[in-house]
Image 1 (cartoon, one colour):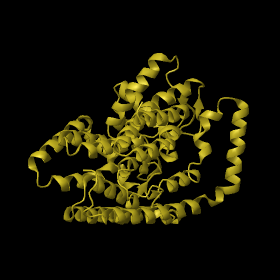
Image 2 (cartoon, one colour; image 1 turned 90 degrees about the vertical axis):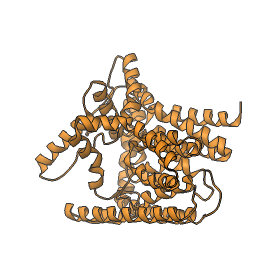
Image 3 (spheres, one colour; image 1 turned 90 degrees about the horizontal axis):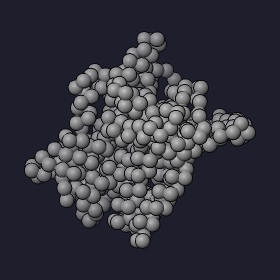
Image 4 (cartoon, one colour; image 1 turned 180 degrees about the vertical axis):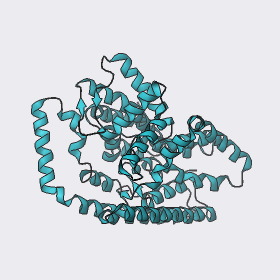
Length: 415
């Protein structure tokens, strides 16, 4: 067995062992809820839009229901695995109440469902390990054993690593097949933040009209499911997809200081300023790419990191979409992942993700309650300050990494 295959097996085994026992309850519930609606022929975008309208009517504020807000390729990825689980299990939904304070888990079926829902992300990680190992064995091993990527895939259970795999595959296939590269890139738009990488492809295609047509044709193919949902209910689709642009600043970014500002109006103003800052920064980096001979890989990483620095909303898992591509570049700061990993400890807290593990028995649940209360009493008051420090540090270090990458003009890289 070659070393690439060994790394794939090692990384996959670690993720499979952890997957059944941990979760982010809200995100897993969102996946189950939307995938079940999709299987039943219900429009998830109409459902979320209706819930948001109900909240706005009750509060008198333009607030949103934080449900399914992604492109429908996410539904196509998860629904077969949910369907297969429900085909074999007598309990169709063993995870209930995850969008509230009354979470109910049916054990052991909850473990089986968590494993089923995390399988597509684990498979994407396995493919990432293989592709990276083919390019650089050390990069493949780094990804296979990286605690941050393992955490996002198997403990959090989010699909940002799938976006990372698709961006990686798109970059690696760019020279060989523009159509395939465009298809893979369009699929990476599961979460719309990967739109930040688009100028990197555009800059390389600007003098190649035939190749550009192939790339855009591939993109169009990948966006057909989104076009379908837009056509059947454009109002609901757009309101759900675009609501991210109206969210207040939050997460691991340079705007962490704004979390101490009180008032909905003040937060709205800060979010709008942040959006302007994001737009300006992406234009500046794109112009730099246009003027210099930077590879697609360098461009994608520089633009995605720019998003992580200046976007109003940067959740802890977003870096997982950048790491697979970034590991192709020697100038990428591989220590960046420690900052969002620490941020999680002072935001959601690690005890939160371990709820399924400790819900297996009453005595283990008592241990969880004790640990959670102790953490809250000892460190709870420090959480906002620590998150602020980590967010600003993440922004500053990432910005330095962007300048390092852009400074490698003329250095031959992948693509």
